[in-house]
Length: 151
Image (cartoon, rainbow, N blue to C red; front, side, top):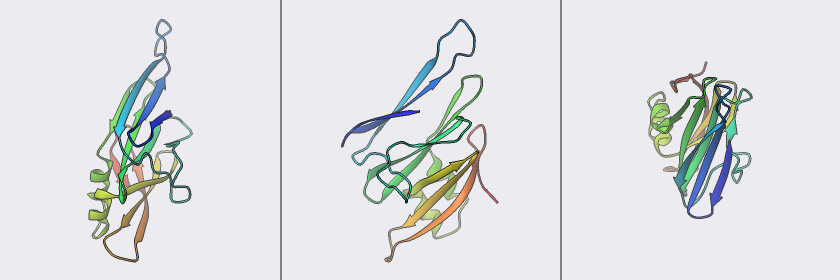
């Protein structure tokens, strides 16, 4: 996964997939996100613009920050056959798994912290009540994009 940015305009994530047969070359696909703020890194390094990938290189994630106090997670899943699944509604999927108040917080602000195998550490932040609190938890991402809370 490579990421390019036009500051204050957009961010493009490009995936290059190996050929699935010997007669074809690699295939690439790009996703461009209109965002004034860019990507949001983990809590430990919020300005990191590199995105996240697991060691198997079959699960990638970015946190797009269109505005202050808003963050949306996107997953990209690749298969050995060269298929790409783009999961654009991660915030909504995760919010359904959480209890209040984190359910509503995850809809508007969800951040990727790290990826380990098929597990993704996420955090949701409550900006409605000072002091701001953060709930950190793990989800498992299936090969087709199904998201479940990790034990």
